[in-house]
Length: 427
Image 1: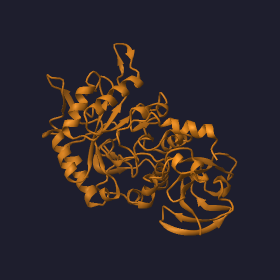
Image 2: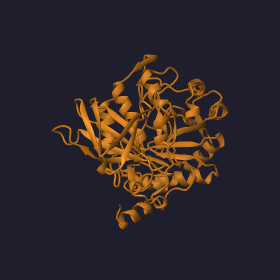
Image 3: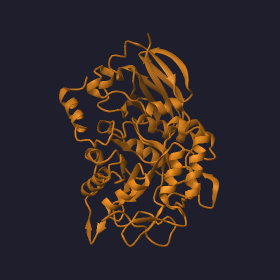
Image 4: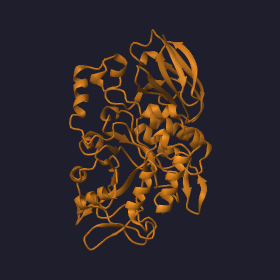
């Protein structure tokens, strides 16, 4: 049982949360950042965006909940004489509003990128800088709303103005206020890279916030992000989510061939990435090409049972008093419960879990080590469950495993791999 003080602090964490009615569950969708060309050199255009929307309808992603189509740092070009931001006419000849209209007609919501500073982070392959929103927050917010935009990501590059570094607590508050003043509900994602511990304060201004560095398509980056997000569950919940950055499932694109894959991780590692993002109740925003999927993309991105874990609408702590749900503090994000003694390294085998509706729990047995391990999960980690018969369902394979008492062992979990289950108390 959570001590009274901890429970009060947990509930208080969301007393000042942004209240725009959005982000009750983490957002799901696709982002342009790494689809064509390596990350950081995005060459997005209207044709690409519309073709992805078409593909996500045809392949069934939309019907599974992947509902956002988001432009990253690639679309803007300059400001006109009135200071209004203008899309690159060579990439978006009919403007952004026309693309929004098309995406909406396919059943998606549309999002785009801006920056808190004077310029954005990338040139998008151009030979000049792209203007950020600094000095134009209200104007840009009104422009985005007039185009029909429903999601805005604001980055944190070029934020030293006239020799003085901007304060993220001021800048994100200003853009949040500007977006809310449009009268149009717009999901707001802050990308301050976790420098100022945004999980402690950003919930007042944004629906999600980057909890750390950019996610690169390699295992070192993925493992580091998983470790960094341990212990942050108490800061996340309906309306405000820790964002570990994009899913790289399947591998980022290649600059020399838009149809070629450049996977930086193994299929085992991509599986772990997707499973852990679901356990973390992270925004699921895919930054790889979904028009011609690899097998691992299909296995992960179409796994309805893991998506259901990510999107679970379990009530908050004060609405659900049973011991198991209170074990996980507040909100719907999962966290690390402990470790399994599987090797000489104490942190090789990890136990992660996320509470679900109907007294169920999702458990991920994660092998962070460099060799295969058997991972044992002792039910004592779930108060009140040690004396129960617990039913296990394999969420990756989407099949029942059986019922067990006191403990369960997942055999031969590969290096950097994960076994993931939904647990319910057997009748």
